[in-house]
Length: 157
Image 1 (cartoon, rainbow, N blue to C red):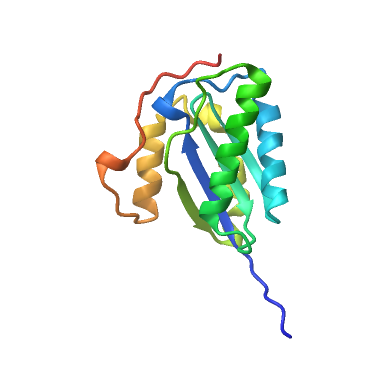
Image 2 (image 1 turned 30 degrees about the horizontal axis):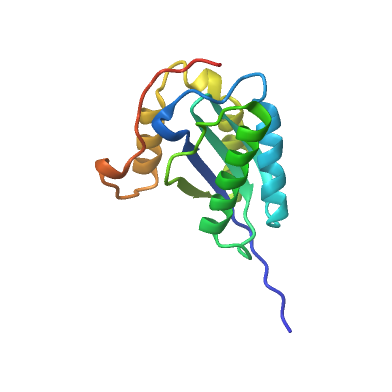
């Protein structure tokens, strides 16, 4: 029987419900480590995870043995529960929906740098501008009424 071989790189982006700035600078790295563990449990590889108080980016080496919607749902559900239990934020929730964008192997280093430099990037660009640019760059058709609720207030809580 032949084996199946893949090389798939996906950036996943989603935000906190209501775009509230609820991800704290004090525990964000613990959150990213937890999310990385979820990704590993689905046989994918976390290559970069970072974000801002109101949204998260992750680049993964994707293993298609888990459908992408199932992987994202598990990341959101499990991390939502983890945040509520470990950081006493009972109203925390991720917004519905997400963005997923594929990259070639030759782009990986640039995407990793981009994700690592989110704080610097967002000094010049809002999340709305960033996300809409990604949709345009990848030629994704979208409807404004189905986009995230965009509020552009960043503060590390």
